[in-house]
Image (cartoon, rainbow, N blue to C red; front, side, top):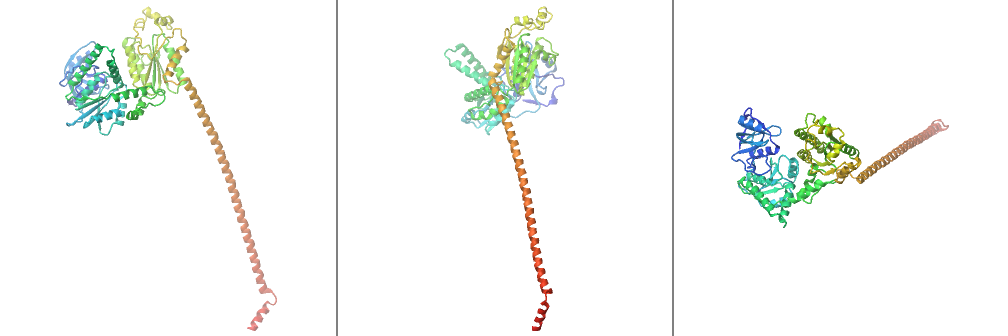
Length: 582
């Protein structure tokens, strides 16, 4: 693959910034992976141009500017150049076509590990490793194991690449070579062909795919259907044909035939583990598999128990259906009942602030809802609760919001299914009357469509129902799902808080009593010490008095003896007598 320095681009070459999935495919193509897609970024298999050429989706304007300049620069989401397409050709489509060219990288290339003639198992990961996976790979008896770590985007199960990478790094055996690659999974059967193409580029003799729960579940369903005697034979033939087509594209995209090993045991463990993770309410999820259980704390930081997990309650429905009233009531209820930040994003308020420059055409409404979804997802990312109440008339917009939110938390879509007739009867703002008269155009339900949700978690009709009844339905659902504590849990929590406060008060009283006792003991010790000092002083004084008395007695006795020798009559005579005798 040819690579260019950044400054080698032609001046004036237009920069095309396709979606992240297309950019990831471009990066893989630059590494020499023969991708099984007619147009990079596709979700279905197709014939690639080959011979170092690729196709990327492009608008009519991008195609025209590229053809005029002679080349196109492919940029990422920040417009940073990734690759250049030259020797261009194109095809226009309804709203969007594609542009084809010879691919050259911008910057410096990356070297992949060479197998050097050894047998190699290529493990391509869309989920964490399990102990069954490691045992299965060992049984293949290959000389070398390469573990492909997706380096961008999210898995089909919504696991961010950084989280999945951490999970793989924590449990990967020391003799596994970890190779980060910009893999963008589709979550469909074409991922099989994509994995085979990657294994072929890495010179693998065996492919061990760690399938996502979404793909593994689809495989399991297909297997059950195939095993069922009532299964429709035509449908089975169609699925087999699709599988054979994907296999043929995979075979065409590789130079070596990597045998696909059976990793279904690990896939099943992951399906169970992910379900526990998603359904956990207050306790961290676990797994019977040693390696999967080891990374559950890592996964729980991405998807904590529901009591701590960020959640977006997203109301949708006609104008006047009761969305804003219920949303505000729910926000007030949550603020009083839960110890989490609550954010209310009402449709009218957002229109005046965040989306003040947008119109009410389809594009403006779509972008308005996506903006609300983006802000709500950021609230959920940090463990908060967002309550949103736009009309959100288009299924495509709501699907985009769900994708953003469920990457970081949970979304509860509430369809306020009050009928159009009832909303028009209420007509609190007088908008329906203006819409019927043609004064207000592009009005949902009158002159603009409303796609009724087919994926709503909850459906509430406020016709004939009181505010309290409707709100109770919503809070009851959130409590039953574990996002909110139940009444019993709140009572228990209050009792526990009271017990803790009482224990703290008792501890404080005990501490005060102990302090008083210590102070009293210190005072008693001080008194005893003073008494001891006084007693010592008294003893010393008595000893000194006795000593003085003794000295006085001795002095008196000595004085009396001297007086007897010198002053008594006859004393001198005795001396004379003695002298005479001597």
